[in-house]
Structures are given as C-alpha cells and as structure tokens.
Image (tube, rainbow, N blue to C red):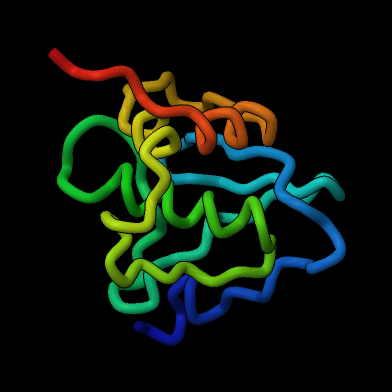
Length: 122
C-alpha cells in the first residue's frame, strides 16, 4: 500500500457514532450518525475501497461484507478473508443491483436487507 494512499492515511472512524447509511457514489461512502462522511474501509491487501453493482466478480460481496461489519461496529476494518462466505445474502443482493450514482441507503434499509432472504432466481 502506498504511503499516500487513502488507506495509509485512513483514520479510525469515531466509535461514538454509528452507521447512519451509505451512499453509492463511485465507491461506497459511509455516513455516521454524527453527520460525518467517510470512504468505506479499504481492503488491506489491495488498498481498494469496496465497489457495488452488477458484475465485476466480488464487488457486491466485498461491499456487503464491509457494510455488515460497519452496522455492528463503525470502527471495524475491512476483513475480506472469505467474504463470499460471510457476506449476508440480502445485503449482497441489494449491492449487486445497479443503482444510480449517488443513491443513499439508510441504516434501516441496510438492516432490512441484511435480514432478508433475496428472491430466488429462475
């Protein structure tokens, strides 16, 4: 990871606040209950921030895994080891859809997706 990369400069998100929602704008942006906006934590191996949307391999499961962790602990780092096994199916389904750039997903919508089984594909 390059010294000037956003991951190298990343400060730990405040543990006082909680995840209020995410904005899908190029990558995943996290809004906390204290009104601050942060890029979602990046993959420590690659330095890449999680992406969303249909295709491109692991993008939706990586984003779902990170969002799932942040819902429980806003200070959590991105742990993408075996993310495809640990990402909640409902969050993966939500983040696998194409959304207009700038879409905001509230905490309630994320919690609902986390607890919901996605529809069966035929």
